[in-house]
Image 1 (cartoon, protein in one colour):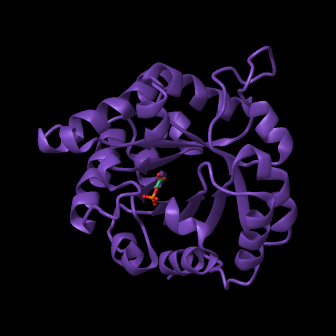
Image 2 (cartoon, rainbow, N blue to C red):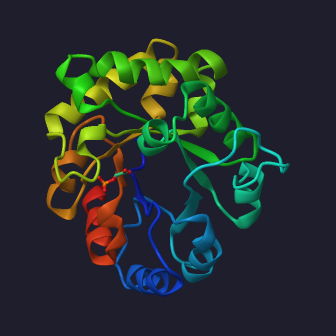
Image 3 (cartoon, protein in one colour):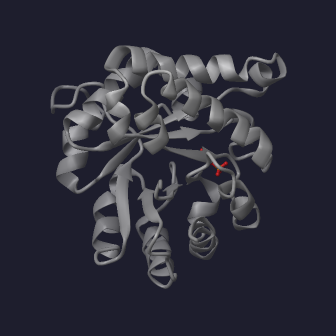
Amino acid sequence: MRRPLVAGNWKMHGTRASVAELINGLRQQVLPADVEIAVFPSCLHIAQVLQGVAGQVVAVGGQNCAVDPGQGALTGEVAASQLQDAGCALVLVGHSERRLLLGETDAEVVCKFAAAQSCGLTPLLCVGETLEQREAGKTLEVVGAQLASVVSALGIEVFTRAVVAYEPVWAIGSGLTASPEQAQQVHAAIRAQLAGHSVEVACAVRILYGGSVKAANAAELFGMPDIDGGLVGGASLNADEFGAICRAAGN
Ligand code: PGA
């Protein structure tokens, strides 16, 4: 059985005051024991969040890491080893905002994935197609290629210590959610692709759905056989909403 994971991607949001408020709200939530929960604040707020959620069952992750795991001369970047030192357990890699707005390539995503694991962090690999690609019937090809770049460079076994998130770009922050059936189709294809290398690894890996997940649609999405939780952006900035999404992932 795969343990569901609900991850809150706070993106470039938050001030010390709003983060304190959000932490307070999270502490008041009844969180399900059978669901793993993580939040990804901006680097500036990682320490504050770790301190604030101490004793809670919430892990903290970074939103990005540098391609090389160690410290070095790379102005503005954060190394996976620094995230690990700061108390992070996970890191997002290959979020579509970074791929599309900042030009992050598959090759860089592979390096970041490897950097994360070399420091003991769990990479949460994001994949997904644009609306144009979906309309051209290329969804599975695009997602398959993003996944294949990691498998071919690093092997299948790395997925025993990683999480995949399917996030259709057209559903991110748009209010348009993939239907449970649309999402399930891609999740099943991702699992089948991994199963082509190792059935055991494919059965165990968690595949999250992301893209306008909210309390109102979470249960339906999480009820699909290959959807093992969610990567939640906008709705994770509201503690009550995020708490409800976490509960929807529980039994
Ligand atoms: P959203 O973002 O929930 O605001 O659509 C999801 C994400 O980008 O991870």
